[in-house]
Length: 408
Picture 1 (cartoon, helix red, strand yellow):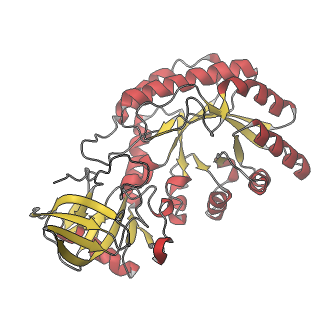
Picture 2: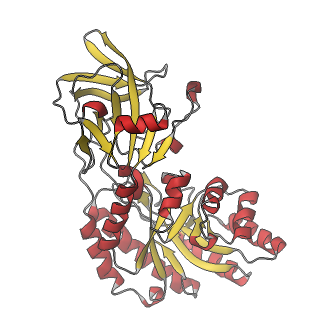
Picture 3: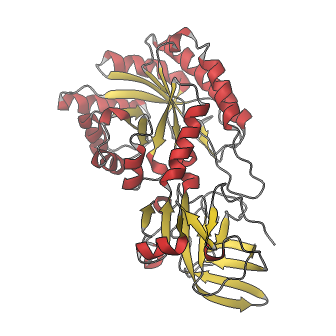
């Protein structure tokens, strides 16, 4: 038997079924008209943002990393909750603009911005997080052609990393950002050639659950930013400190100690170096804001035995939930939080493998998991599906197509 990951606190049973946003899973499926289905609970997003605001010093803003969940309704819901939006493509820019987001609240990172993407961002008034000297040169030329000074910050590749992070975005050779020792010269050139200087973006990693690691990384970020500001000889209008706040996915994972992180950051903010005294500070968070608010629902279409093993075959799978299948960066496959949604809270009685509908042995949602007995027609829930689910999975694989998404 392999344990499943910890189901986020607050999910309850209603009439013997999993309730999401106060509504039964089967009711939500009926509204959508089919399975599989992603459901995002707006109340859980609101609560997470409120929890974050209460823990962080008032001076530190919160940006939403759109790549975590770019669903238009989620973006629109985030608009009054956060201070800014961080995007990584012209497609995400279009989604934000369609949702009525003020371009001045948007920053654009990514190591391979095409000229047409740079032009769209500059024309709209979005801040470019410049990833290289070459990108800076192209942005200046496009701005000159448009007759508009590009708003430019520099994304820094620091010499340190976020320890224990699921994806390291800094430290050593990286495709992301400008090496720290090259930043002052590039910044002075951009400013000298007429860019609207917006500051620095320092993102060290993601999906960290250690408060100690995040506290250390934030301290390093603030120190580096102050040193770079001094070397540049100009103030930093804004410092995007990155994020890295993780959520528990697997057995043994413990939630991040947010109050401890917030208290340590507040202490640092009270004694900032002079170079950062007037800088706008923000964190860039995606998964931490929306990940636990999402549930993926799929239906059991077959129950079968093979060599003494029970398989629950669903109409879902890795084409919607690549990470839950273990094929999105994990070295050793572990079970995501999952449950039988239509028998939620019932006592587990059997060990089963929950698999998807794709013709590949990679399509696994839970291995050797202890569950209540489930039959054809029952719904399976995979939790922590609010981030890097629908948009980070190969929905076109084998022609099954995307799953509908509901914000409730």
